[in-house]
Amino acid sequence: MFEYALSVMIFLPIVAGLALLLFPVSKGTGRVVGFIVSMVILFMGVEMFIGFTGTSGMEYVQSTPWIASLGISYSLGVDGISLLVLMAGTILFPMAVSIFKTESKGFYGNLLLTQGAMIGAICATDLVLFYIFWEIMLLPIFFMIGLYGGPNKIPATLKITIYTIAGSLLMLAALIYVGVSYHNQFGIWTFNIVELSALDLGGGWAVLAFAMFMIAFAIKIPLFPFHTWLPDAYTEAPASTTFVLSAIMAKIGVYGVIRFVVPVFEVEFARFAVLLSMAGVVGMMYCGFAAIAQKDMKRMLAFSSASHMGIIALGVFCMNVQALTGTLFQIAAHATSTGVLFLFVGLMEERMKTRNIGDLGGIAYRAPVFATLFAIAMLASVGLPGTSGFIGEFLIILGAIKFNAFIGFLAGTTLVIGVCYMLWMFQRVFFEKSNDTTEKFEDLNLSETLTFVPVILLIVAMGVFPQAFIKKIEPAAQLQVAKLFTMSQAQVADTKTVPTPGHNNHKN
Image (cartoon, rainbow, N blue to C red; front, side, top):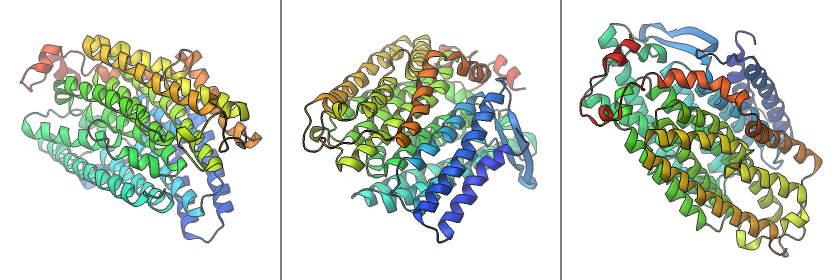
């Protein structure tokens, strides 16, 4: 890859998106531009994945001083932690652009802006740069829900906006605290995450800053009890927007915890790991039971997505290599399976004008290709062996039991809830008797089939050949966990905030 590949992947969709918003072009032109740009980013992302060596350090690095007096730089890079999140952002966007043909050119422009900002947030190694891209990616989401959403789009837009603004302000305050603390300790300014990991933080202010970062990321994941914006936003957003929110944006919340919270707040993270793990398990259980009660397929998938994000977050909090590797793997697995399911539901709504489970039935007899591909994505979502969902969930549960047997047991048994409501939904929608609503449901055409099949094949490939992906992310997971493994569970429960000698030696 050439030197400025990451910058091209960030700013090509941003520039193209702005052009679609500013110039008077037709929605057909907007769709074509969106598809071409997203395919260029896809090919660059695939080439980057193939060329990634799997070492624990940053690759494809680009760094240029930006505001030198404050130590802020335009710094980009990819390692095993960010690789699969980046892959999700490059592989899935062409689907979001190509499946639905009725959106306006402004919608495609906002979608491209979102992609560029997301890639920027994923690849940024400077905390200020990450914050800037984090803020930019929220704006197009606001417009896509507010302008193109369902009948209750305004309340849903206001709710997600209030939550995200509150989280962003907390993150900004914590970011400033971290920068000032580094200046006080070392006499220079920097926001580079590698250099910030040398900080020795402690006391009440460190705990407060840690909590601010965690709340900001917990809102985006979303982690219980900061999930209440999700059902309304996912339900009212256009299918492509829900797809982006679930498949990619939520994963950046988890990525932010791994990339920026763990290296800087190691002691605080270890102290509250059990509490955070319980929050992940409670979120899994609550959202799983809530999904059972839903009659709207899209709203059911929204709660299902939140439940699965709970187990993905749990893998971070367990502080061992197996769980963290499982989380990084499951980020891509969940993005492909649940993201595809949201697109399928969007197609069903577009063709039948309903998402109500009780109004559907017999689709498998009318559309066997649609039903087969839907089934594969659904089975991956519930973790069937041989699919991508099994590998990630297995590693996370394994790491959770190693971390705390009770938490691991709860997480493992809670996964059964997802199997119940997904199979119940699939049986009713696809195998119950057909009715007037589903009688004329059309199967996927050739273009739609070719759009879905590569991602379905990826779901199977990740389940059958997981080592091809694990070997690229495991070294980075090992390096990250190395900063925490010397802290025993007794030290986590201790009220002292002074790091162990081994911990200090690692930082120095």
